Amino acid sequence: MLKIINGRVHDPANGVNGAVRTIAVKAGRIVAEAELDSSAKTIDARGMLVFPGGVDMHAHIAGPKVNAARKMRPEDHRRATPIRRTPHTRSGVMGSTPSTFATGYTYARLGYTTAFDAAVPPLGARHAHEELEDTPVIDKGFLVLAGNNEFVLDCLKGGELEKLRHFVAWLLDAAKGYGIKAVNPGGVEAWKSGGGNVTGLDDVVPGFGVTPRQILVALAQTTLDLGLPHPLHVHANNLGMAGNWATTLETMKALEGRRAHMAHVQFHSYGGEPGALPTSRVADLVEYVNTHDNLSVDVGQVMFGDTTSMTGDGPLGYYLHEVTHRKWFNGDVEMESGCGIVPIKYRHRSHVHTTQWAIGLEWFLTMGDPWRIALTTDHPNGGSFLAYPEIIRLLMDREYRKEACRAVNQKALAKTRLADLDREYTLDEIAVITRAAPARLLGLADRGHLGPGAHADIVLYDDTGPPGATFANPRVVIKAGAVIVEDGEVRRDVRGQTLYVEAAWDRAVLPAIEKWFSDFYTIQFDNYPVDMVYLSHPARVPTTR
Ligand SMILES: [Zn+2]
Image (cartoon, rainbow, N blue to C red; front, side, top):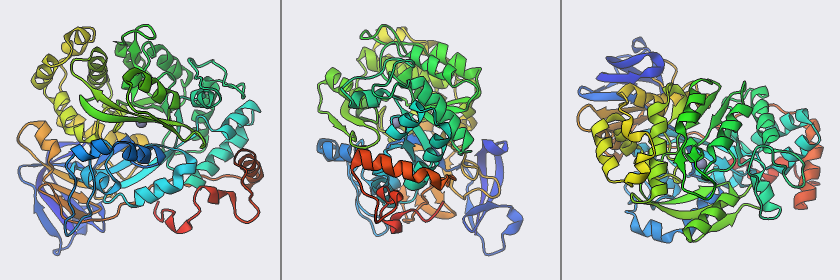
């Protein structure tokens, strides 16, 4: 039992905005103070801010492409300061794609207690679970890629929406995933079947005769019909291309009336002609999102520096390689998806990179409802999650932001609205976009807040100093009621939970799935069930929900 007293509590989900409150913890959960007895340990948080643990709803921390990126960039690991072994913790390497142990400890040291990998191919699920098992402290889970899955496309081709629903439920169940993601729907399949792509919502996917629009709408509806906690997670077509804002707007309109989450929306907000310099079209898109509450976004903020782009969008990886001339990895084509990995360095002087940086900040500063926007860098695509405190400072401190604007490409900056935006985020709004909103958008009712029944994931920050330093150095991080981090040091190693959904499906769909696997992968199912393709070590299947 634990009692945190005298701290200024920021718990926007429960309407607490900086009031001094006592937070009581029993058996890993937040409880009413009356439930504690005299044996409760007390933490005096005078001069500190009390926040719920951070929730990262879109990052890349496990799965085949994360591993490929780890192997592909030894120079990146070598440059970074490694995490040394301590009596409590394992060692690990850092850089833009840290090892599993380093990922868990580093998130915890930042005050993040839950993080989701946004894109795991179902065939890579088993390994992704093994990695998540090795990612300490934080709770975690992943979204399963489905937007280019041949079985999905086959169902749509035949108009078999009920079969699709059972398949998606089976897929989640077999892969032990938390939600469904569509990455460049139809485009990755086009890439795999001849090096092409799709360029708009009504292009036809070769071999299937279906369109990205059909895939999006059917998967969005399927997630709703299944009652999944998180709606369809959308990586729209034409990511990164000048002029793609029109595709993004059309995608949002196609989803009208259905809940959906638009991932890393910064990368989808570009005006200009294809092949020319991108411009900002945030104003058009944010106006649409502000007036359509079925949609939520995470930003995918770009930060200057060296990082690794990794995406399930195979043709995009190739495009980035062509633009940057840097080494390139194309993979997962044998799975139900694809992927591309390219190192990237975002430069202050670059017109394109400055535009991307400003577009991300424009999204934060013009979005009306903070409950429908989450802070992400699409780690590591726009930058590492280690950049979150710096982003918070840019949002909270107008003068600091103006200073930062002086260091970037002025021509590019002048074509955005960033210099005119005076908004400053409050501490409460920061609590919303870094924990309360992402938890709510993911459908995690017992995370992202400090009300009775919530997981006792709590962070204490110093109440003084610039916000960047405050949020980079939590004084105390508590996970499930246990003090894990004190004054920047991980004092205790614990295992978080893997979160996944249990969706109901009809066994009648199994023969069709087995036939599909047999046709595409020449697998025989005489001796074991088809689920074992994904998770053939039952002992490694997460035991918690
Ligand atoms: Zn991503």
